[in-house]
Length: 531
Image (tube, rainbow, N blue to C red; front, side, top):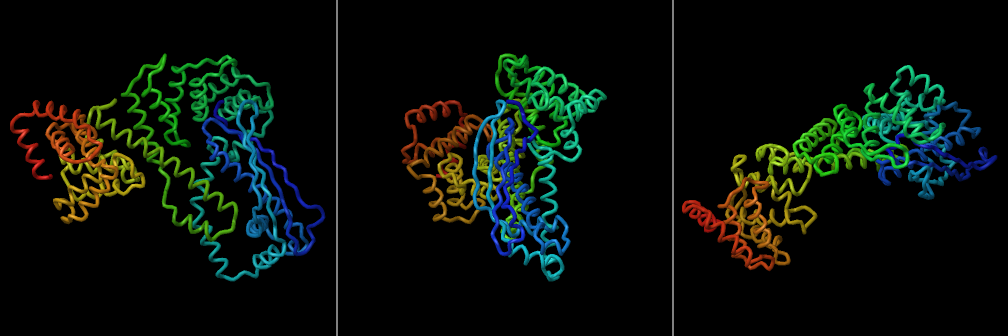
């Protein structure tokens, strides 16, 4: 299945006949929309886009229905005002979802049944035709002003996203006949070349022909059309059995690299694909962690430059106040898309942090690791919050700061995932800080609280043991046999059930033999100080 950028619409609207003039009646409208999923579409994304389109259709038809009423005609309202009235008086009663397949692609069909209250429509029509109060108009203008930037941003995303509604220019070309597309494509129009390639790939208005699709994709891609570069790269990456297109990772990488450097509309997507490719071993593409790290950093740079605004308080407030179906669906769709992109960005930030901490594809640099961890930690990631707190606690890479260590460790320690080892390790470290009053007021009760939190099911010693091995392995903090000895000793001195005493006793003896007398004295001093 190839990336699908074009939406197939099958809209059917059922209206009651001869009822437009019936006063005070609740009228029923039904609309259906079918969406064809592409490779970059999740089912949830498809459902949101399908829902937006079918509700747009049903709103338009409701507006037509309201406009046909004789009372409304008398006011000569604009179509925008009529649709606004329709949104206010329409209620969704039933939504039906069906999944199917078309030409090898998964399809999602939504059918919505809604009602229109004509009596309420007449009241609103009267107000919006001149009977509204200045306060009503001011409130409406304020609401529209607050939504303008969000709706505009979503509009750009929907215009260019796979499967989204095309912008007017693209829409015009999409509507062109095949001969018209060929004429434009032959003249070097890269957009027409891209659309013609899509037609051949999907068999839309022409016989399905993957080789001709590749021909026109390559023309558009060579002309710098980003979507064609990305589509061509993914096509060669996947290969199409039976269609004469073999998987060719070298060609895939070549086109994906071009798309990645021009990644405007899907921030970081092509670069992320490249990072994943180089991080794995395949038959034809050698594993290359240096290139994987390079593309991961480019992906993150793209994503940070277009990071979505995740302050949803105002959007939530507007959602609660408005009855405009289109605005509500726009808000929900934008929030979902932004959250998805934000989650992917955080994962990439953490990956970069550990790459620099481990020297995986980059020169080991714990200071840079701390910078990436801080970006991820400020976005709520548990692993990054713990890693950053540990680095401030350790004080060898960044200036030791117990106050900042406590801040980030408490963020990690209070995360919802209570079973995560990072959460327990953060709780153990916090218990030490409160017990000794480092960076926080000395408080035995708080120290006990955090230790007991880590010791659920007797796992506090396991958390101390885990910290010891972080120091032994040198990630995310620099390697230190002294600190490994210190934490492993605390673990063995605990009464936790999770401690592997035989194994850890042997490991402790090996570490002890490697320490110089001064290092062993320092390790023992730490044990005495913090026990």
